[in-house]
Image (cartoon, rainbow, N blue to C red):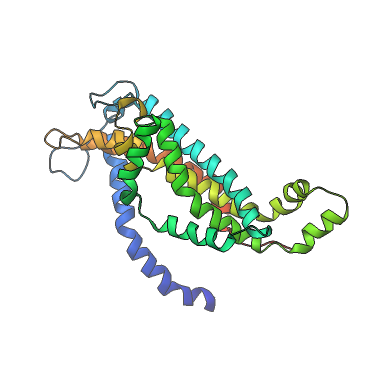
Length: 275
């Protein structure tokens, strides 16, 4: 009881800071399903008209909502998969192998991660044009993956560093190959880090806005973030209730991911255990 009482001030402060966000999301949910008179606070009636984007193609200059959603899913899933796979292997190599210029490579990862995306846009634009990947979804995926990799590799290297060498030595002495030792003995020890990289890379890809807007402006490579931007591009006739409904549709997968993986997200730690 005394421990719970000591936590009350912290809970009250957190509740006060969270209250504006709770109010904002509550009004978004209400406004997405109701009709209100201009300037009114309380809704007048229930409606699904704001969700017409699900069965009608809106005049936004973008593809339909389902094509855009598919693009977003492909973009986020491919980015998360490639980042996770490369981070798992590269992190292990940097942690366990005596590579030439290993320290220089690790320092380079930090430098690359420190560069904001916006500062690299012009160089990325020129490179994609030379490769013929400008205004394509695959071009955006390659760029996003490259920008996410330094952080993923560095995080996985830290997880591998906490795995005791004795686990690998025991597997090698029993006659297992280096790959089998990594796959069956080491990889289970860094599973929390793998899940962290996979989930956060997916969420980063799902919420990406700048890269698809700048390097894939055509309608065939647009994602949900740019679809929402097109809804309010002309603010003189913007339908903000429609915008809120699309935002609710956009946020739904993120909410589902949190509900499914909340235990793993709350128990992410770096560490291996002996035995």
